[in-house]
Amino acid sequence: MMKPVLSELKQKIGDKATILKIDVEKNPAIAGQLQIQGVPTLMLFQNNEIKWRQSGVVPAHVLEEVIERFKV
Image (tube, rainbow, N blue to C red; front, side, top):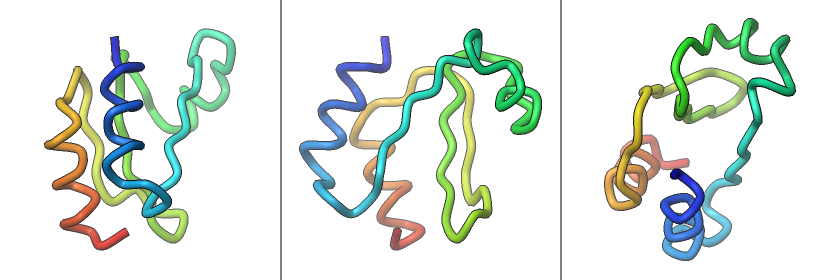
């Protein structure tokens, strides 16, 4: 469900940020480390710190605003 949203976001932001999609069922260690309990969980990292996170589907324009807010 997030794939088209992330594709749209990538078109809007270009190289401003890197978008990674991780399958938590295939990578349970990462899910545990990041305390992911719901899918999808979206996170914004900057300098190895989580600056923002939210569970659930988020529209591309909202994600773009989050990226702009943190000047990634």
